Image (spheres, rainbow, N blue to C red):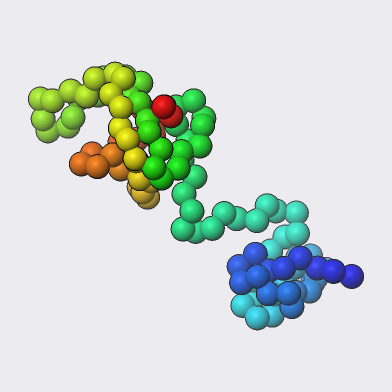
Length: 107
């Protein structure tokens, strides 16, 4: 019988322990029914419409945003080119600004 590779270390030396799968190489245990977790270094960021964003995408603002600590306002429809995805509450790096993806849509 063929068992799945370990989702953590990709080892083929796995076995089923009546309840879950076990990897003897890295001691990782998982349920065979659960979906394999995404890579820890890969971010999944969606825009306001639910489209997946990726590094290098162009995005548009969907509403006016007042910059905190400043009198400047970013206008609806402002385009940001070549974004970068980052960890955190403000998960889109637009150069000098960090914005939340919920206020953006893919251009």
